[in-house]
Image (cartoon, rainbow over all chains, first blue to last red; front, side, top):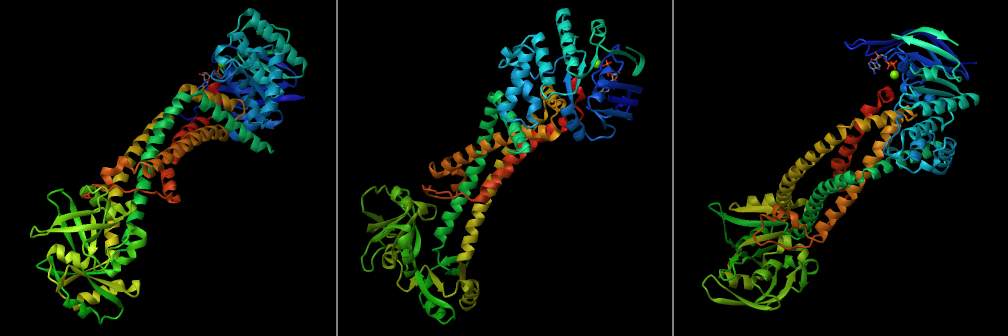
Length: 228
Length: 392
Ligand SMILES: Nc1ncnc2c1ncn2[C@@H]1O[C@H](COP(=O)(O)OP(=O)(O)O)[C@@H](O)[C@H]1O
Ligand SMILES: [Mg+2]
């Protein structure tokens, strides 16, 4: 089954203004369910922008984007959000953990708007923290947790509502070799559970890892090569 | 429990927790905010209480007063005028009055001396502690609280004052006006007509003015006009006119005060606006992250709304309570000079503010609403763009 379909996709930032940027142009890509895809390319090549469209953060300027069977073009923000929160888990380069909250509260944030009562969301969040081996940090303020642990918290938060698609933007950029490897091993685990995973990275360690099914290379907002 | 309701509870939970995390800052905001509301509500309650005191007391004012004017000044009125009014249809009674001012050089007291008319009998129950002077008992008086203080009577019931010819007249206190009515009765010394004439050395063919009682209150203005036609050298004053004058005085004063308060409130709002609209990068980032994690724009706004609501309602309750205590138990000390500046004897009256819904609504409109707008609008601006900036 195809999870994501992109056809003649273009994204132009600040269209019609002096600071107009064509970040993506003529992107054609299909991603199967349970596929692990690595987006490669130099900085500014459009990886993050492509990931944002696949993650239903904003619709493309033109072309077709179909994620989880739904066409995103011209969908209002409200429906993008609704679609996003049940389908997609994000892992960010700088983790994007809210530093003023505790680790547990951070993981519970996605569950709050899904209408989970306090006891249920606590139970769910603790279970996923335990799986990632950071449940002993649950009541720590997020600002007092080490980088490696913080990424586990970020992964826990991405997984807590059990999304079908995981999107990770430069997930290993702030990790050392050992932590990067253990992250990729965990992605393997998730792949075995049936998740669809898209990673962006210019780290060869990621591209060469066994979990990766396909590498797509980008430059100047276009796909220049694709190999399995 | 429905999903939507649980979601709102969760958002409320998040909002209150984030308030609590920034408790020092928020407590400061609440303190400043309460102070502003305290001033505004004190003022509102004080004006209300004073107006109701004045209205209650003025209810006993004569319906029509007839004064004789000579060369633009008030002169004694001949008692013969009473007969001329008797025939006007609708008049229930006409009575001469004796009143005037007495300045005691000894004590420095400025006293309004009133001769008792049959009309004043209505006073007895509601405004007095004690009884009215009896007919034929020379020297019995009722004193306002200010006079009691100025003559330094304490518990003495007998005192003497000088007549215009410097002979002495002795008085016995048989009652005092209740402190609640002090705004209007503070400087009054009420005595029998005969005592009044005696005290002022007035001829028995004259009175200070005439009071007219009317059968139908709706006819007051009509009858006043007729009196003016019959007695060409008089000025006719009606109770509604007096009431209007009082409410104008209060209205002007409270209007002036309100302008001052609104100015300070405006300053506060600008401050709040500045604080809220200058959202820090961290706050913007938080909004972006919440949105990326599936929060709708409306959910983010609800967080800010609950925060603003909690802060402003807390400040409202605190400020209004303090305002009430200030007026009811501390007699509005802070506003004394403003409200009583026109009175010669500083009245020392007890006020019992009634809480009117309109007062509270007014205070709410000028405090809670602007604060909510100032917290929600900037968040709305930050939340209504795609959250991709938080991804970088
Ligand atoms: N919000 C934005 N507004 C304007 N230009 C942007 C924005 N985000 C990204 N860009 C531009 O789009 C291009 C692609 O950026 P990005 O997708 O972040 O690339 P990558 O993740 O591969 O580094 C860059 O030229 C970048 O400057
Ligand atoms: Mg990027």
